Length: 255
Image (cartoon, rainbow, N blue to C red):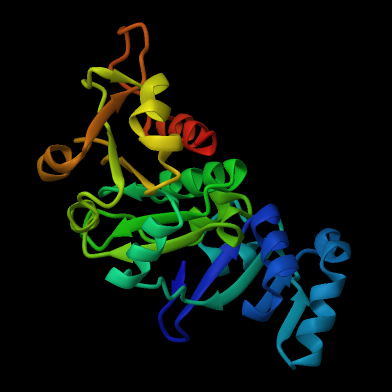
């Protein structure tokens, strides 16, 4: 939940807040927790006290529910400034290409829980950068995305671009662009070969995941160098985008 008056975002969920407190305590503006959670947040409370920022035990879990607008707060809520997602520029993309980066790109993934689950998987497999578009359909970093990410937001850089298509077009001939499409001829097991010389290390790789309902946009699909599917029995057409992203992220971790 965003507090528009103070330009704050509520981060809730035990693992999400604990990771935030351990890695970026300076980002916490206010911290609230139940008595049984107090013992886990002693060090960050000292940090908050030193800079005269508020922390306290709540009288009732209902207070946490009100702060986060979620019953899934797990006994702790941290208020942070609204995340400022850096906007990609051409120079940054060129640096990614030169260093052979592996980048996951989301093309209008609209569900915040899916975004959080994808961030969690990216953190697990060590894929450190995700790009989201500025399209209206694209989910933003939210309270639920933080909670579902289970601390992954502290380990993954999220960047924004005008759209997934903008980035795919910009990297034509510079990086290998691979789109996830359940109708593709290539299989997921082909990804490492498709990534190019040395598994994409020489020029970098973009893997693009599409919208939950419609998949990749037509222009992104047409612009990708390769399209790849996850083979199944055929009884179910496709996986949820977060599940599919997990499999792609595993393959990316092997590049």
